[in-house]
Length: 217
Image (cartoon, rainbow, N blue to C red; front, side):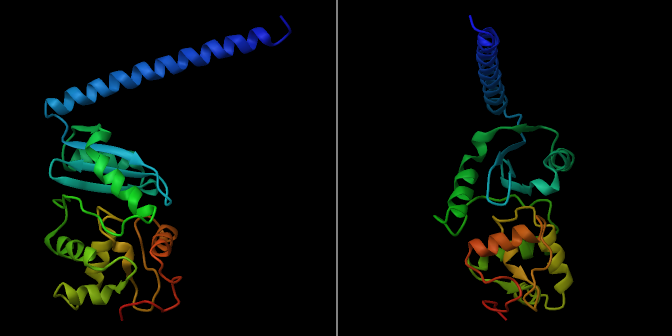
């Protein structure tokens, strides 16, 4: 045996053992998730999906999608908050989020411009919920100013409150708060960061921020 062959053989055996262990752990996890869901003890299911704006945590209750979170928010912090605000019975259970994952992929690959998902906005205040329920009416490729949204929800003077409703939107992308811009065409704030907001607008064919084109002024 030439020098190094024994080491390579050991490495191959070790890799195979590690893969077998990983498969075993994955199988046990699937059994655990299946048993927990069958017993009705998963109050919040979550999974992480890849996207052009980074990994997204998506979470759902039995009532619908309850959270979409950018990695910049800290997924562990988001899960901790969900466990405190909804239920400590939070489990990574990808199956419940299959439809959401498919629709997000379709959106990011240009195969779909809308989402058809049940949403759970229980943690939004009445005004914020009114704003968040209005936002999907701003169509793909279109934008509106914070002031226009305030007018549309019947509170024309509540421009700042509309900004807060967008900033606290628990379901960014699905509820398209990225389509709301400042009156001067500037991006304004965004939960996932302005780079993510600009990327989402570009995906929808919107001119670069600040050009003043394409706004519903």
